[in-house]
Image 1 (cartoon, rainbow, N blue to C red):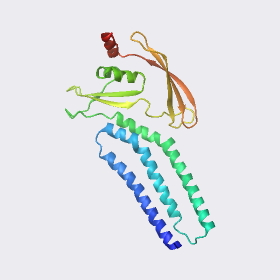
Image 2: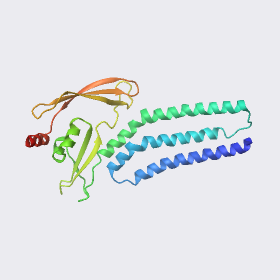
Image 3: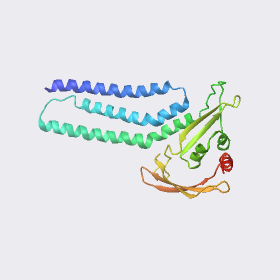
Image 4: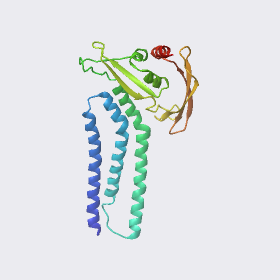
Length: 243
């Protein structure tokens, strides 16, 4: 293969890679635009957006590597080795930068969007009017014992929306430890619960205590926070009825 043929092929590969990367991002945006339900959007963004951007970035960087080598004027073993080594090294450096941006900076942006989607007023299919988000105490009447137990140990969080005009209720499920918090040490959005320890079991007559262990995935900063556990009124009544 002469260098003219290689240059043409490298450019075509680069253009193809860039087109694929752009199509991946556009496809993600289109899928989001076609989703009318806020919870569906929330789950889709949380589940796939960062991974989608990372895949598109890898393909984009690969295209750039080929394009950077589409102006070859000679084909000697030493030249090829230097070109390949330099291209791979630069590609890995750029990839690492993009990965860090998606891992440590992008979560600030995505968290804000997810919060807006989670608390965006839900529309009742019965009346077409905005529903009310019930408080923690109000929602217990619509959660079964298992759901309340999940909330009590912070493994799952439930949002209950109610149409006060018709009584229609919509229950949405969220992971209790779905997102990292901002680290007080390095300020990155990488501060997560890594372990929970029940110090005192909650009973119908007395509150319990849970110790949450946090650790930053970036700087390693650790912290602990004690949280009060309580058994909801509905859970108390159900327990008493089956005792």
